[in-house]
Each structure stands twice: as structure tokens, then as C-alpha cells.
Image (tube, rainbow, N blue to C red; front, side, top):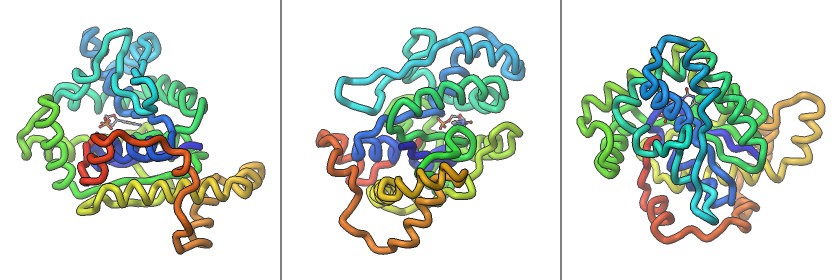
Length: 282
Ligand code: DC
């Protein structure tokens, strides 16, 4: 099963994607980290950020890898060309460089191909901007996660303070989020926009665990609807449409998501970040 979570920077996609993956025992793919890694490599190699062909070469020739701690489906480290760039891709310099890099069609082509290969290998929560529209239009669950600009900027500042990386100036962070939203939404290739069949969730002022539970519930409904979805897929109807129909058919909760039974126990520290509503902007 693919759970696609799209939305603008700072909406809480990473926090939510990781928590949903842990609850359901799914793997998790942060596609933004892949674009950031290519931006880091392009800067390291002195590649012009408006040179589509050269950026495409960077994306094709440097392997991106995610490092896992044993038993944890959520990756902790990311590397490109064998260099660990986990922290290096979170700087303000990369925040700026990643917009032109992610707008380059040849980069998108290379990374989308890799994302499909990774995601098709198992049950995945995949987060990004174009997951429900381009990468996995057949995803069983599609969520478009948003939050107000101000809340997203506050979250990002808190995260930068915690990480010790990136700007901690609220006005600068807010301006950068808005600049990236505009760039992500207006670019020609795969602009940020909700899939027509995505479920819209606004995390502003909400407990993050409610958002997480809501997505787990959608996954449970999709799983319950699987035989119908498969029959529809054979007739060319997107699977996520079946999820929405099943939601309409079953408005009341009925005992919780099936996959939760199989979910691994979360360590206390990780559980508390979800329970207390801490949101890490992506
Ligand atoms: O989610 P993030 O902020 O780490 O993403 C970094 C940049 O990559 C962001 O400016 C948008 C872009 N991106 C994209 O174009 N498509 C994706 N699927 C994921 C991210």
C-alpha cells in the first residue's frame, strides 16, 4: 500500500509521515530530502542551478541512500554519492538552492523514477509535493496536509533551534516558506497541488496525533476496501476513489485500523513527540 502525503513546506508532513509509518509498520520515504541532496551535490560540484541537463546528470550519477537503524522503518540518515548529508541539506543555503533544482525537469524525471522503484518494493508512506499527482497517482491513500503560513514558520524556527541548523529569524523563515510555496506551486513541472481525490487535512491548531490517527483510519478503510479497489483498478478507476467511497459508506469509526494490530511498539521518546503534538516541519 502507498500512503501519499503532499503539502507545502512546514505543514508537518515529516512528523506525520514518520508517525503513521511507525504505527502501521510501513517504511517511509522523504522525497524532499532527495531533492535537497541533489541541490547539495550540485552546489558541491559548482553546477549552475539553471542548467537542466547538468542538474539531471547530477541526479542520475550520484546514488542517494537512506540509512536505517536496525528494526526502525524510518530512516535516520541520508547520503549522496556516499557522503552523509543529513544535516548539510537543512541549511538556509540548501533551502534556497532546492527550488531551482526541484523545478528542473531532468532532475524530477530521475528522482521520480527512483521514488517509484523504492515505493513499489513494499508498504510505504511517501511524502512530498507531487506524490499523489505524479509519482503514485494510484496510491490507495492520498492526503494533502496544510497549515497556516504563520504556524508553519513558527514550527520551522523551533525545529531550527532544536537542530542548531538553519535560520531562527521568524520573519526570514516566514518569507522563505512563502517564497518556496510560490516557487513550488508555480513551476511548470509537477507543481504543488492536491490530487483531485486527496483528502485535505489542515493541521493548524490541531493535535498532531489527531492528524496521524485520521490518516491511519484512511489506511484502514483503504485496506478494508482492497478487493473492491482491485476490481476497480482492473476497470481503470483510481484506488483512492474507492477510499473516499468507503469513507462515505462508513461515517462512524468501527474499532480502529486493522494495521495497527501489527504496528511495532514505539520507543517512549518517539511516542511522546507524537502524543505531545510536536510537529517537525519538513
Ligand atoms: O519537503 P522539503 O521542504 O524538504 O522539500 C524540499 C524542496 O523540494 C521543496 O522546495 C519542494 C521540493 N520537492 C518537490 O518539488 N517535490 C517533492 N516530491 C518533494 C520536495
